[in-house]
Image 1 (cartoon, one colour):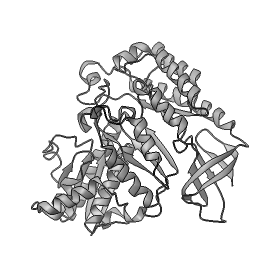
Image 2 (cartoon, rainbow, N blue to C red):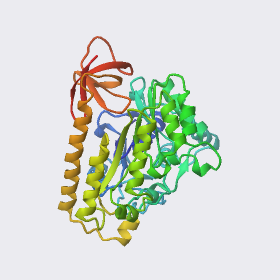
Image 3 (cartoon, rainbow, N blue to C red):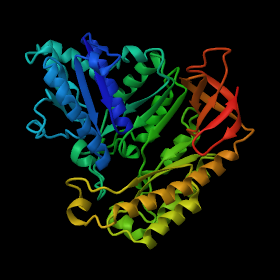
Image 4 (tube, one colour):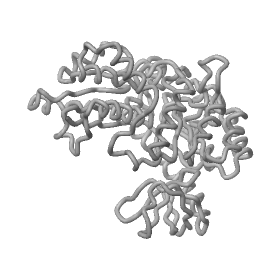
Length: 434
């Protein structure tokens, strides 16, 4: 029996798909080389943008014919398209889907496969395995160098444009001992780098009362023998505090890389987004991060074309990015999401072609900035954790999350730390020699 999983969207979905694959393999399933060979097919979906939702619908429609030809195949739908409301209202729309799974919830499919009448002791054993050791899928064992661990689920921040609270539910931190057990298990299976995930990761533990915070979690994971690097994302400007920055600065395994979305550079737009800070607040935060963590790389997210955004307001975002010169900017065109405040209360009044013009203007700006930042690395020797090989080139990342390629046939570099001298620098990657 074989399975195939399509994973769309964020790193959380990647982590959720890996857990689902692990659970399936516990039942004796193996990964299929092609979807056609699979007995179980799962689409793990994202709906943070309309384009992602459309992609999920396209995949589902393609599976309709396959189900008609092979009614014995089991089709599962997972992730943010499903949401947390069960039974799923999508069941009537997609009758060829056999099982619907909320985000990070593989149980409905597992229960379907092994029968609804699970014995209590069998269910307890499976739940214990799910919350403890995570067995990597067979194809990843001994090969996976860097991976993700969900430290939190959901979000309670309530940004005006964001669908995540409606699809993943309110903020819920996983117990630190469960996270540590999963991280240790992954390292024992050969993983060298772990990224702790949360929609707002720097709020970790705030829903647990007086328990540990993200700084405590970083310090605990840092002590796992065999772990080489540790990262976390995504942060929110309101919750990056001194304890967190001290942990990044003091812990050798924690990388000098912080992702903290600004979303806009105009105060009125930020207020309407319900972000809770001003552009000057963000400027001061960047200054503080850079002062506390030398050579830090800061990544950010920006939305263009938010309802009511004028050209002047957009230019404030442009000017902020030109001023701060961050290492990477993820740029998205605004699209209204169901249930969100902006979709309910604010007309989507920036034309699509104008959104695209603004997106391209920021992309061109950031390409220039990134190229200039990376060009300063020419001739430098950088520590690279090698993740794998593409064609004839090894690839890996620096501590600041820059992608580096190099050629060397003298050994198998996968999972190793090496020093690479940079000989070519572009905006999105570097090339060097060992």
